[in-house]
Length: 234
Image (cartoon, rainbow, N blue to C red; front, side, top):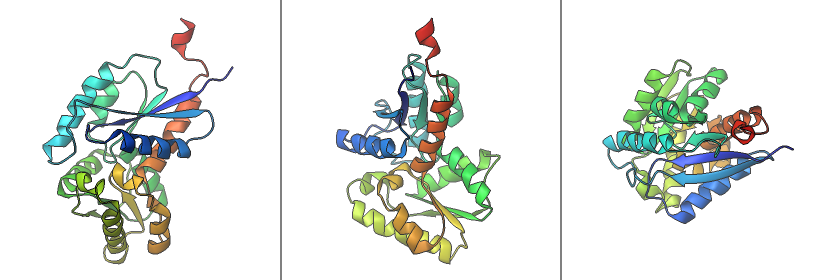
């Protein structure tokens, strides 16, 4: 008998409320096919938010410890919930199950579009880490620009309407001024604002959401695995 596949969204920061984590779980669940169940957990030893550049490394270090403690058989696949994949390789090494990097997966998809892509992210710290991610990826599109909204995640969750306006502004500038033929939302929080279709209509180009791409990739990984966990047969 086929079983429900379990897909985890692991958040590297500890500052989100229970309501915000449930919001993200519900968004992920709507993107998954039947037979896949979404769960969200936070790395509670991680920084509250990415307020400084070194918080990315702190989150990755805490996540490695978290993944090393995961018991086998709990998840089929995990989405590491940062759109620019901080510490992804080390986390994969530590994890007992496959880990999807939203940035890696999205840049692979973007490369198939064969058009320059702009990344719109939250602040200057995320801009720096975006360039770090792009520097290690072997498959990626031509990069038109990396743009900052100058609004850190801590503020976005407090004022989503302002975040939506700033995101529209930067996406339109990426297309109109930078020559982008597609735009990647370079923060998982931007993928929770519910504006992808608005942006696609306004900008007239593909808008790549890290949550949408990661959900599709994770579902394929989960469904490709045996219908019964190996640990259940031992």
